Image 1 (cartoon, rainbow, N blue to C red):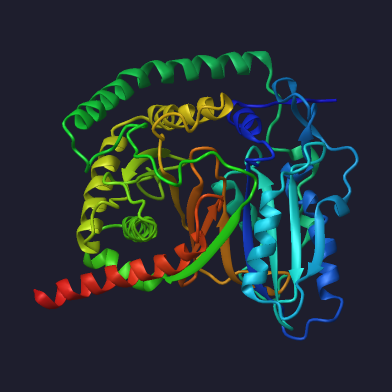
Image 2 (cartoon, rainbow, N blue to C red; image 1 turned 60 degrees about the horizontal axis):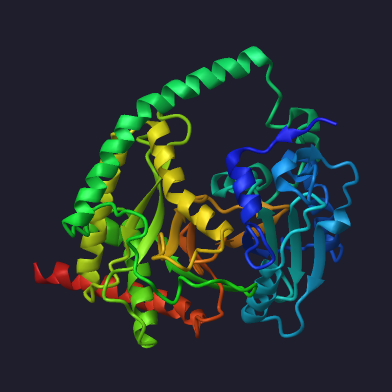
Length: 463
């Protein structure tokens, strides 16, 4: 049996995985059935979901040794059973959105079975006569956000008449990872060593500058890990989870970004800062120092810039700033400086920076010390561009897509947003234990947006 070696990231995510902190990512999708769908439509769709391993090879991967990740690798599943991965049921009447979120929160709590391929799909009826939901979770060792969107692109269509075509399925022999001969491996190793050697002085210079900025008390620059304040969000987790969702208008947020000469990401980060400020203030737990966001950043300069150029910066939410307009301006100045610094780095140095910032979380979590020091960050914020076109799955119109992510010891909240057609779909994944009323963050996000929008409009009127 061919065994595909686990890379560092796969191994780290699997080692971090536990019943208290399952390391899967998920998507909650809301659909409207096609007009005239027959009574058997949902049963047929469930059968199709059970065949997705024919389209996505990663759905056939399982661990060679589920009990010992350090000695395990990926192997092809030899006894795949759709019923172990696809679950079809309905909400009790009346089938409200809150009932759906309660069910999805419970499903998100449960770890995936390591003796099987690490994915599940839940097909959920009961939201009305023509609407249903699909909750899909996959272990983070198998897929990241970019990979998940590519999977959706391969399955969905922009035509309501299109149907899932299994004739286009890739043979299992075309799995993404093939073994390389010894000469090729040596060449790749030499190339990587050269890249790492060149990256060291770049990364050292940036870290030195970040340290100097910290000593000087500069806040509108990239921050170092372990400079975040202690908050309610930075606790040890239990197994409970809560999914919180809301929508914002993409066009309205884009208007703010253009008027303020900043990015959509800046606007959303400032909106999140306002919501987190109000939540903690309401509990009397707002620290004087701003909360710190872990922010994945794309460094691609345009369509000609092939491949991924992703890194990771630590940017304040500026929860210490009561004025929403000034908060946005401070966020924009900070991210602009950070992107400028990161643009000077090679791809290797940028990735090394991301790994360096994530490594303390891995080490402290595995050693049980994640809450004994100042947190590396207070929360993750991620903004993923989605489809501008309406998408269809077997004729069903996708109405909304909410990305649910990972929380871990020392970081009990994760805020992720995906743009889809004309809206921004926010999903907050949280461990609600010790976070009273965390569901209010959906209301507070909308309130924070309205406060910022009024402040921007007032500025325009006063000029």
